[in-house]
Length: 344
Image (cartoon, rainbow, N blue to C red):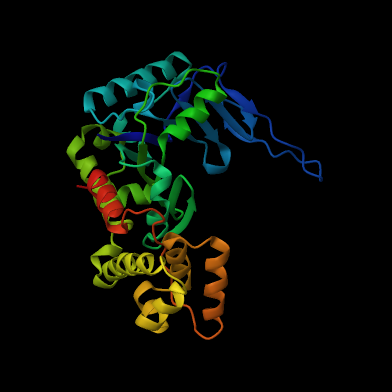
């Protein structure tokens, strides 16, 4: 199920009737003897006011017009990792937060006067292989106008206003529960989460076509699911619509099978290059980087593969590269599995 992973709300017209549960950062003194504290509310000054509860966090920052920000994860309030996208549950969670804030001395306005400035959507899937096995496939993808950051078990496509991330949910749960000295819940063995994050008010408005909290709470769950699928397909899973990208993946698998066959004899790489031609192989694969991966996948040690590729690099110029899969599964089978489970 696709659900809500995080909401951030911005509120101007609030009232602080009792500040006892708010923590106040008093600010610092500058070298000139001036304080960084600014007026917050009710004659109280500071650099920030905040309140951290079990289910939500509140911040008042004078540098942003004393706007009150509330952040919470509605799904995690209900379950350690399962997603919530039910409107009645979301409304119940919000009513509980609003009531608790009132009891803490902070009065909030109507939902139509509350701006939704961040929405994170997420989906959990069970994968056929451990999440780390999909690393090369994710490394081959590029987000539209996004920076790509990859780790063995997490992959980020992001810019200032939005982010898409895929990661091993089991590793996150294990780290969180170990940190809090708790026993983690039972989860699937191969457990991946994908998230889409609209991180700015303008991006929320552009993608979801609304900003106020009342519209969010009344939006259809299927509409939010559609946004998640649309953004993943539009921002990340878009390159394989191009025939040349599909051809690179297909050529890689064909060359790998042939090189493995030749590997049984002597001088396999020389025979491989002589039969197909170095230029054609690089054009098929995309670069020296992919060729090196091909050699490793065919059974060469990493050092031997690097040595062979460096010989070729002296006389030829590398093309833009696409990583390939290390195991016997094809790029396309991994790609289609992830695409189908997250988007279809």
